[in-house]
Length: 221
Picture 1 (tube, rainbow, N blue to C red):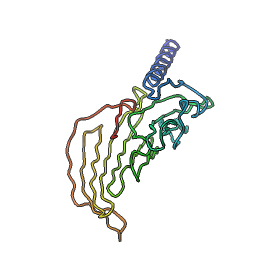
Picture 2: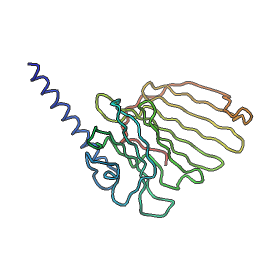
Picture 3: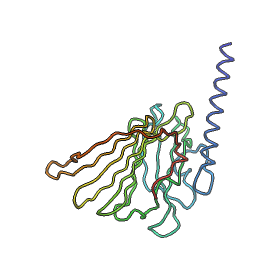
Picture 4: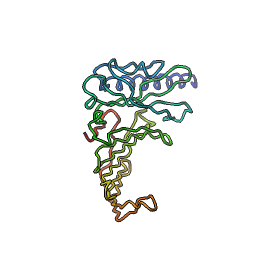
């Protein structure tokens, strides 16, 4: 009985993995399906695209270094090439599997003006993606994704938005927790002497909870 149960569980687990890989492939935004598994990041980057930056970190708690990479389209001028995001799970001695990809979240390379740029990080199992744009007046959007244990998909759990005037040091932030529906809006004044932001006002509110997956996330273009 135990053997039968174990076989059923393994079959179910395999079906979930194959289903998730299929969905990740179907949602590939780069005009061509990516492999479900491959030895290295370069094998997932579509022809004509290149890695702009990448980061390693453990996204599923297995102690292995997974990969999140920002890729950029090779065609077009230097200021309007499309960006995309690819996330891979590491397998011990077996390369990587495609966890998800998105070509709608990030603005094109150079479209953000003087402060154009994208940073990715993995902190405590959470994938953090930040996009910068503007010049004197600038904006920073930050999205947070965490692996959902039930679906084995990356789910957006939070969004932060900052708008500021670098000349006068004033700005505002809106931080939204999509799991709890709690939103905190603040205004601040940057204090140069103490090198920190001084909060001028803060307000808490409630918004609708969300279950947005990485593949479905759309950014501010």
